[in-house]
Image (cartoon, rainbow, N blue to C red; front, side):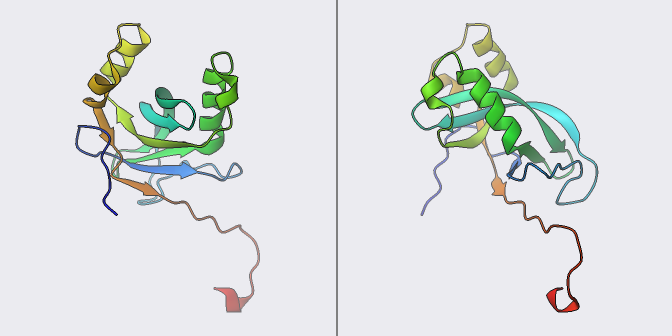
Length: 145
């Protein structure tokens, strides 16, 4: 199956959605170095609504270009955005597709935003979607290494 590119900019960043609310990542899962906070404009597709550019502060590894988003935080921000506008959308499936250029996103916040086609010219898809595998700590028999 061919991968469809949404944005017109070349793909950038690896995206990791942390689905484990009890786990918080402060180190990069790739290089194990400390990450730092950075604000991104995520392009998110929500079923029943469509595309939305959402400003989100994420953990980021500059060296590996890995963006780490905690699912519970992302869903809380989406619910907050739709609470008064379209409450029926809250809880719908969604997927993060890429990042929008910050200047384009900020123009949209000021009301001088452009059409979807213009915004997609300033969007970069993710290079890859990473998966976090968590092995709970504790005692394991020697046969389960």
